Image 1 (tube, rainbow, N blue to C red):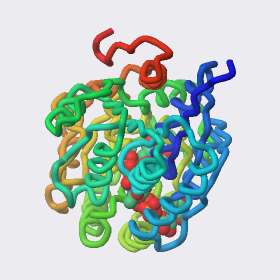
Image 2: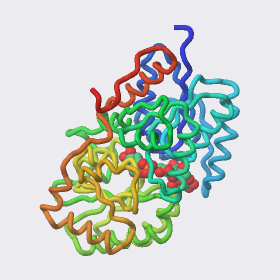
Image 3: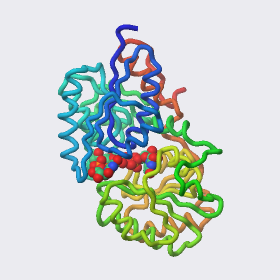
Image 4: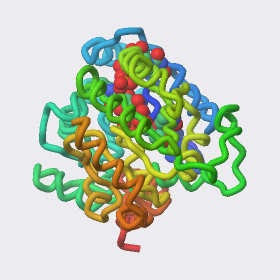
Length: 383
Ligand code: UD1
Ligand code: UDP
């Protein structure tokens, strides 16, 4: 086919890469589409880990990551870097994902260059512009710019409707569920040497992650203190904490948890190891967005180490509970899950409000429909 539409995916952080990977694979399958991948490089090691796993070869990499980067430096570096790429290439549409600074700056650069924007994982909201920071504002601003909106759930679509965003909105499911269906296996052998040697049947393993900007400082200290108390109290339980590469996270984690015998601090694990670790652990404690979607699908109770969430679906289903960032409350809620079988069972049912593994197909079909090359896909939940 000669007149293929040029679809450029732009992303820069680990979670964006994990969630864009299945979509890129789907775009590549379609004859009507020329798929172009542009990395901003907001992350480096944590991004490359994902590209290796999913065998994605980027066409461009702005390579902007620097130690101590701020939301301003990320935004301005992406904006100016994207301008050069977009000028030469003129894609028909740029797809951005979620709520990072890459997302917002990428969308803004496309708008300035006269390139249409499709927003993947659209419509998530807390309506508190300071929490999560800066993600809530990034996604609201990206929503204003976008020409197409791929809302994972009906609730996300309804948020957009409240903001008078009603055109070209598609309910697709979340592509993270597509990714999950390719990674988790019963006979999986871990790549990481430490994880390879773990006997998950021998103890309760609790997966812990924390990295959010608004949690850096006092809240992260409170979270780590709670984990220390829990670990001291429950010697038969083991915590595994793959630490984000941000030095502000690692410093606090090492200081408070470094010498706790039943807490394992390790490097970020690759996404296959992570998904299989999650499927074998007892429960999850996290401030991550992605983990809040993945763990419920795997039937794992989640305590969210934040005071709010833009992902209320699994809270409503009972799998996810908000534990906040206060030490005492975290200890109390986690202790109950560790020691009260009934409380654990009530929270451990597998629920999947975030997708059915066909989000990438729906998004790709929607793009083709937008350009007059196919039928409108049915919304997630309709078929
Ligand atoms: C970013 C996103 C956040 C997302 C998170 C996923 C923004 C403002 N924040 O936050 O929404 O939840 O990614 O993980 O867009 N670093 C490395 N190597 C890496 C990655 C990070 O060394 O591969 C270190 C660097 O020192 C970097 C720091 O981590 O400066 C922070 O990275 P940054 O992207 O600014 O913030 P995140 O907390 O990762
Ligand atoms: N993840 C990973 N290795 C890790 C920690 C997380 O592969 O050591 C994956 C996780 O399974 C999820 C995504 O990274 O798919 C979440 O990324 P993160 O928590 O950094 O960002 P958020 O989702 O909060 O934006």
